Image (cartoon, rainbow, N blue to C red; front, side, top):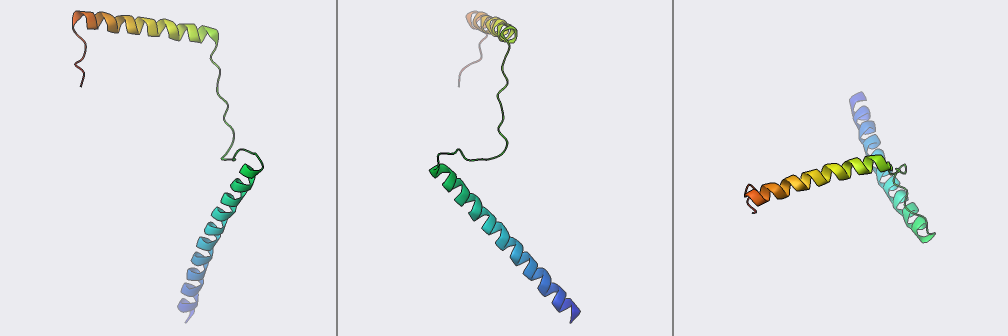
Amino acid sequence: MATDVLSALRRALAELRSEKDRVDRHITVMETALGALNGQRPVSGPRRRRRRMSPDARRAIGKRMKAYWAKRRAEAARGKAKPSK
């Protein structure tokens, strides 16, 4: 008889947890909808800031890309370019 009570309690607890998850999802949807109506952006976690690139880093990348494309053009001119699909 003790095992019947124990299994019934576990089953009831599992059902309550699934119900809680469902209610939490509904609350989140409603909060998002209310925020949108008030003109707020949806909160989906901490805001991530974009890192800025220094002018020196931008110049270095530009230099590398110019060399890359010059090499590609030279290979294409020699006929070593990869065949297109």
